[in-house]
Structures are given as C-alpha cells and as structure tokens.
Length: 279
Image (cartoon, rainbow, N blue to C red; front, side):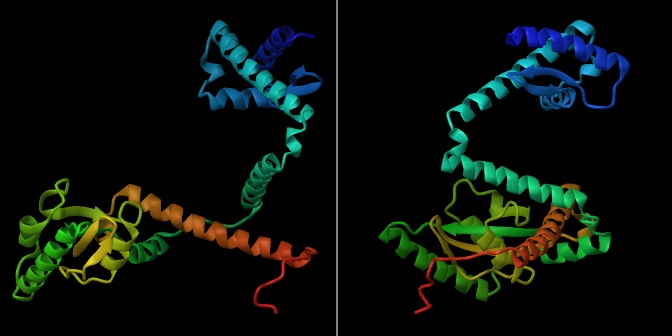
C-alpha cells in the first residue's frame, strides 16, 4: 500500500471520527505495519496550532493531509534509522535516554499528589529573599594601563566625595564611562532574572542608598548603589509568576530528588572507578 493510499483511507476514517465525535483513540492508518492513531493526528494538528473542529470540510481535509504527511515522513525516517542501527549509536542512545529521563520525571510529577503552588504568604516570603532592587550603576574602563591608572584616580575622587556627603547620582553623571548607560546610571528595578548575578548578590547586602565597594569584571570596574527595594504589594504580576515558577521548580526538584534517592537505595549499583583519595 502506497503512502498516498494510506492518506486517502485515513482521511475518510478521520472524517468519520469527527462526525461521530468518538472519544477513544482510533487506528486511522499504518506505515509499514506501524499504526497511526487518531490521537497522534490530533496531537500533530495541535502542535501546528490547527483547530480542525473549526474548519470547513475542505480546509480540514487539507490540514489533516498535511499533518498525516508529516507523521508518515517521521515514521519512515525513524524506521530507516532503526534499519541502519542508528538507535544503537552511543550518542543517539544518550539522547534517547535523556528524553526517557525527562519523560519519567514528568510522569512522576503528574502522578504525585503534591501541591507545588505557593500560598500568598509563601510567595511574599520568597520575595523577601529575592526582591526587586532599584540600582544606580557606574562603570569605569580598565583594559589598558592608561585606563587602569585613570580608573584608580577616579575611584579615589568618588570615594572622597561620597565620604563628604556627595550625591552618587551626580558622581555617576560626572564620571560614568559607559556611553550606553541609562540617564544617571538608573537601572530601575531589577531582579535575579535580568541583572548580573554578581551585582544582584552585592546589592542585596547594601542598605538603602549605600554604594558598593568596586566590583571588577571583564567589562571594567563597577560601583552600584541600592536606591530602594520595591514593596511586595507593588511588584508586577510577571515577577510574581517568576517567583511562583521558582518555588514550583524548587519543590518539584526536592520531591524528585527524594524519589530518585529511594531508587538508588533499592538499586544494585557498582562503581569501578578508583577514587584518587582512596589510596
């Protein structure tokens, strides 16, 4: 049976499935003996963001034919790969194992009766550890010997002026060397998802309006001022969702680590690699 004949037969069966609104998965075709189910076709249509139920008969048939062609091509390629023993290739096996590993973890989470969603109180507590900070930033370049000397001199001036009560905002305007910096170095409110991790960790230790010690990176020497922390009640919904996802991820990782730990306890594991310290 040719591939096109399979498609024509499948299309007739699919239209029958839709008209009778069958719930159970139906075999709608075969590729070299391997069945194609109506669920597989539905999944392919959904992955292409096609809602077949809203299309007229002609448009639906066109969309389903395209989806079936894709499924058939996929099946034929996989079958050919297996005939060539590509599934025995170590690199391919590793990739397959990664997919199986993720699928197994996903299935564990789906079947688990645990609540991953935090309460409002838990969300606020999480925010206290990962607040949005409004920062002011100054960068001084130090790639060449001349720049390094100038930077040391500028840092001395800034430190002296701050000690005398100088306004860091004015100092940023006067000495900041980054031409792409926002006005007066004001970075607005930032969090761990959109701020250099080193800057964020340093800023968490600062009091309001306090300026950090010089922070050296590959881009230069930086000074940051913690202007203010955004109140929990004022944080945008996007950051609330970010925090929720962080908590869900942490809880799921903890749960999965426990289950995987139990698997290790029950398994017979032997390690033949000699430890360097065990001599």
